[in-house]
Image 1 (cartoon, chains in turn orange, green):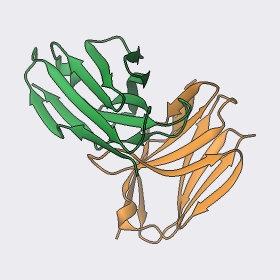
Image 2 (cartoon, rainbow over the protein chains, first blue to last red):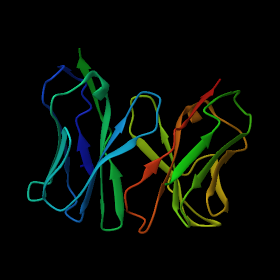
Image 3 (cartoon, rainbow over the protein chains, first blue to last red):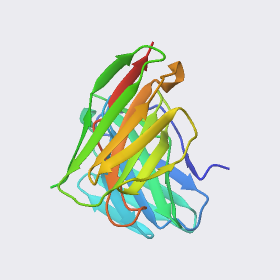
Image 4 (cartoon, rainbow over the protein chains, first blue to last red):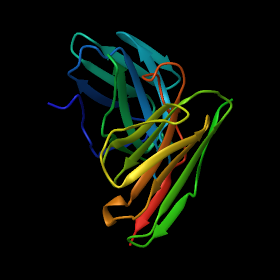
Length: 109
Length: 113
């Protein structure tokens, strides 16, 4: 079993849709959870950083962590064509740091 | 604010040639530094990380090496490139603990022919 599982997609949605991106993990020692956005041919940029279970909101983005289910999500409201990118989850704790393989998202105008 | 630079941005090299990729960080001191490789459509593969000058840990045995001659400089090298070395190379830094959030540079796209 992989430490972090992320559906690679691709995911294609119309502009204005709500997008849900998810990762599951197996290591209960993970305490810090991150989402990165990577545009084509660019380096990943940190989008959201959360610690512990619960929700964190930043504009159109909401990061959700459910430690009991070992499941994290990133929601994008009112998606825009500029949100088209690959989204990578990442998590750390217990002296380990793992990235998911990324989900490719396309928002169609 | 902190900034991370990588160069060159793109590189095309013949098989068997040497390689040197450079990464520098500004606006922070004693960062943890990382080299990743990202193959097309694949995830990030951690190659090396460093917690201080001259301290390098290798995650994957291969024909690549890394060095950290200065606090905010990280270099990825190879004596003889292989076709399989092609990919997108990313440098990243983090502060504090080794498992804090990482911040990435713009990357170097390497094509070995």
